[in-house]
Length: 499
Image (cartoon, rainbow, N blue to C red; front, side, top):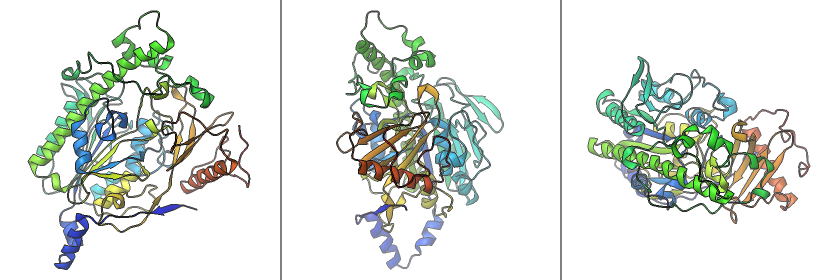
């Protein structure tokens, strides 16, 4: 059983325009066919909503990201299906969960022979290009032009893989990638074809090397700490105590560039003082990298304005996942907490999407594929697991049902993290940590949006049973295969014992 709820729609200008065209005897289908929208998808790496002004961040201004939000739609409940770089990108391209697209963690290779939405756009007459971070280990397919970073890439003087071989571009990666994207739109594409352009930024992924113009940003400022930076994790699952602590071995040994850049902390610091010392250093460089991304968005928007393409370009801005900025004392991603399961999503399409829209429905990165195909006027393949969220932002679309819950599954035990799965509804989040002993977490997001109090041990059996069964329904819906630790798949009439 799939439970969905209906949407209530506003009467908006776009709907009035469609009605006027119909009254005047203009074929709406013909209008769409004549002018298919260009599509630009910008995917950052590890950009989190806590670093964006349009999401309420007070850490730094992001005027160009904020412009996108003011001129389009901001999604407040955008989520990823697997919070790690390569699997998230594969989910975006295929519209399918990791167990079906074949990329569960960063060490696996993407099968470029499978169906992707760029291939479908290309077959329908779109010119397609991808520039910047790719991080799928195999050469891009479905693109007429590709120029991608090898692996993670580097911040300075980046190399790019192309169909003709490897090239190097001098400069700072975020600026170079933006330069190359604008050059492709201006000089390399065919002006008579609609285009799909995918832009991948390395920033703000760790090592956090900022552009020189932003190196002094926050130099004389102590940034505010998240309230949960020094949180006691006793109510959380025990597996988290050895995971992504910002003063743990992973930060100091795994991120070699971090310790090389900042050196050893002062002697004599308490555990609390050490955590604050580390936080102030990495958060500033992280935000300095974000400043370059924001600047690049401004340059892209300015180019669309100057070239006269803004009004017929669908512009999507997102990240491969969120990132911990010290919340719970963590950094990195992976975990099914709001900071990293969520991803920023801003979408602009002038004349179609109402400026300043805010969407509060549960949206997944699986939905990008169906949505872009929908806006391009193309059929959405039945095997896609995502849904087109066009109906959430285009008032001309008919009212229909939408999902009431999202399923999450993380596979990789790296960084001390345990594979886990879970279900998130509008109000609750149930997380199931897999392994030799299953551990559970449950949060009531209506009263605990920062997820600091695990209520699994005190919740009613009825609530747990409802959420466990919803989890099971989603597993069946998305064809999640059972394995030795998947205890719920053949769930009987009783809920599993509390552990």
